[in-house]
Every structure is written in structure tokens, then in C-alpha cells.
Length: 177
Image 1 (cartoon, rainbow, N blue to C red):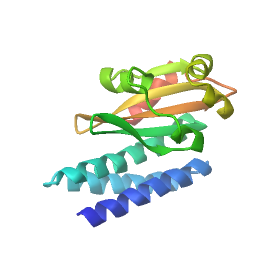
Image 2: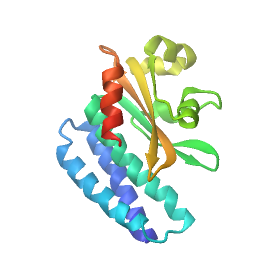
Image 3: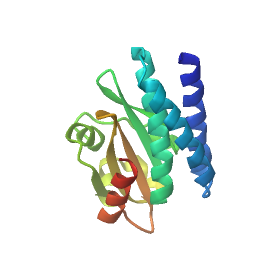
């Protein structure tokens, strides 16, 4: 199981990278859906504790790519809960890997409350000036659950020429159910 799960995880993260550079991600999404179905079936059987994180990375990376394509987001990150901390397991831009979630920050607040947020670019760059180089319009952050268990957070930045709104949030929530 470990070998198969690790192979799937690596595949999903590569798919997220391909989807990050390609506007036509429909074929990739079909493959991600198949991988998620496989993991769904596998996760119904007995799993070791170390398999849980890998499954969350697989499911999370599939959710990431689908959401990024839906939102037409410029940049995004996937955070998975590990040892009482949210760890960024995927980022679309190198600068994002240098930024860590603050204990009282938006990423942790969304995870803890399970309430998504939409933040303006002005607010985000005031808190995190290093994000100015990404030329963002806004940020949408949404909690992730799998089989009724909270496991992480997705965060996306819109391009500078538009901002996310409640309609985007509703579409995203529908997609991730």
C-alpha cells in the first residue's frame, strides 16, 4: 500500500504542476478523478497512520487543481495538518514556500473555524509585503475535509485585474463537496 500511495501522491503533485502551467486541465482532472476514486476505495480498508497524510496529499492535490482551474487563479497553496501544524505541501510560486502560516493568521483561522474567507490584496500585502511581487487581486481560502474529517486548507490568489467574490466562494464550496 505504501508504494502505491507514494506513487499516486507523486503523480498528483506532478499533475498539479502541469495544471498550473496549462489552461486545458480537463484531461488531467479526469485522471485525478480516477486516482481519487482509487484512494477512496483504498481508504475504506485498514490503513496505517502514515498512510493518512499521503491520502490527504493525494486528495488535496486533486482538489487544488480542480479549484485552481475553476477559479482561474493565478497562484495557490495546499496546506495539510501534520503534528498540530498546517504545513504547505504544494505552492505554485517559490515565494509562497518562504511564507509560513501564523498561529493567529488567516490559514489557521480558516482551518480552526471551518469558515472560508475572501481577503483583499491591500489587506494581504499589508500583512505579507513579500506577496506584492505576485501582483494579486485577492485571496480566497477554504477548509478541506475528507470523509467528515478536517485535514487542510486551500488558498488561491486571483490575478491583479479581478477579485474573488461570494459567487466564486459558492462555486468552490460546491466543487469540493
